[in-house]
Image (cartoon, rainbow, N blue to C red; front, side, top):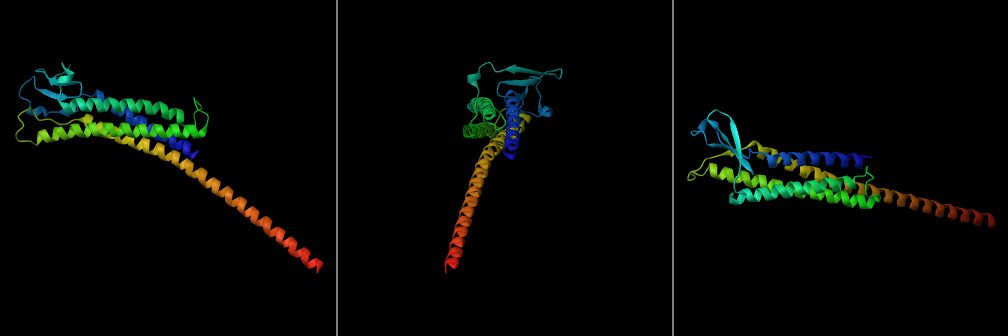
Length: 225
């Protein structure tokens, strides 16, 4: 029961991280500029992986998709690929983990096979969390380097809210995958302890039987004398 509850909690934790990463990928606030420093009405205020947003002369925000996706900077294209891989791994991990949960009866019935499937789902969640962590950290490192570079002449941006969401989602995916894997290992330890207990009980019964037989032999010997 404890192992099943831990599996469910781990899966919910990983699914929460997966949802946050999905929102992070679609967000347009990976980097933002200070509105007080904007001198031109068409100056970009924020930017994401797929589009950037600008403040108009009336104070409203308009977003526009990148005209040429392949013309973006190398780190942006790499972050797109890593985030897409993270989402795909998270989706596959969610399906696999659902099939491997102890409390589900879909697809598999053997407990050993379900155990292996659940462990596989946990590893996929960990890989997905690592991919998103690399993407978010890389993007943040580039923004920080440009911000503190005195020779950089372009618009200096700051870390956006999407980066913090990305870090939070990555941590949740990693924790969910680790806990899901540990819950399956805990089950193995419980089975090992149960086997040791049964072995000890059987050994004690055998020793008791030997002691009883020896006592009967001694008693019969005394009677014969």
